Image (cartoon, rainbow, N blue to C red; front, side):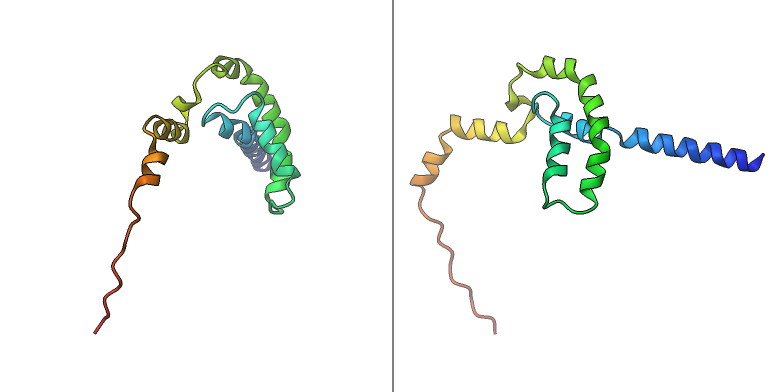
Length: 124
């Protein structure tokens, strides 16, 4: 009786762990700015294909890849909804770049005087 409860608990824990980690790349890619369709699957495939990634990340990404594909398929209506949106709304980087273009920041910085720092004072 006790062994049966332990087996059920272990099975439940395993299922919850798999469900909690499945589609991780998909969730991560959808938490930021719009990156197109099947962005989690593409990100996972890049990790698997890149030989510079560590020995831990590549197998984990390979395990996650089919789950990310399923999650990306479920996210297709959301991706379609976001496909026409302005990326500057979602991305702080895009907002900064857009602001710099509007304010001609690069031009004003090129005309600025160079920063002169005083020499260090000797310590007694």
